[in-house]
Length: 140
Image (tube, rainbow, N blue to C red; front, side, top):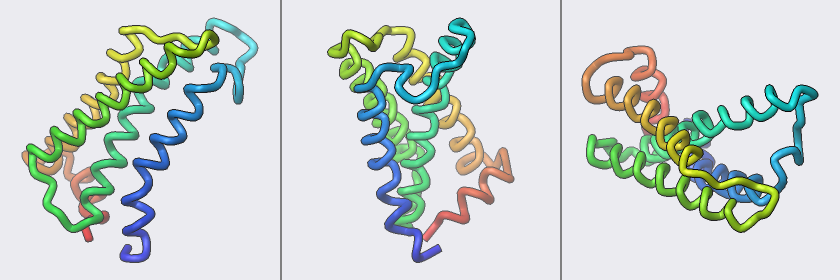
């Protein structure tokens, strides 16, 4: 795992750059499903996943440093992820072919909150033992 420590630490920032680049492009730049309703639903649902992934990447990055993930640090990582979701929504508002809505920000926040719930329960309350074991694999 030692060889992966730096890539794991850089991954959240690479992912943030990818989010930034993709939100600068039209939503149909890479994929557009034939049924427009399904296409819209799928892309709107991705907000829930996209920022939950960002939060989890931050958790893994911190664990790879050998630093203890405290409840306070865990909350800071969640807040950073949520604030980046807000930043992304503001960024999208400057592009006429993108939308920026409060509901999108709420979806970003829900995605982070779900990840936060599971990580908090796994690491600080002894629940979700399988997730706890997976997260412990990333400890330096």
